[in-house]
Length: 128
Image (cartoon, rainbow, N blue to C red; front, side):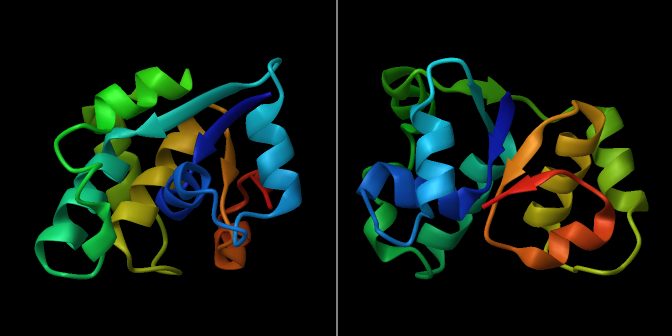
């Protein structure tokens, strides 16, 4: 399976946080799965750290790429096509970071690992 981690799933995975579901943890641990992390998550982590919403993410800020490499995760860049798709999504969810992840999951045929049930309304494949 090809998985795209939502930002919270990435953070919880790295922290060993029990908030990460057993299904999500098993999927990330499965060596047969490819695990992608979007550039949007690096952007979200840096932004939310800067404004104080992720005060414990300091070790990640500026080193998301290195952390992904150490975990064996793959970087997913943002393309113009991704941006157009995210901007064209119906207004069911307003968070721009989440909208980008939804667009990327759709375009790249990835399963989005997220606890956000509202994502189902976009017709994506979601694992939690």
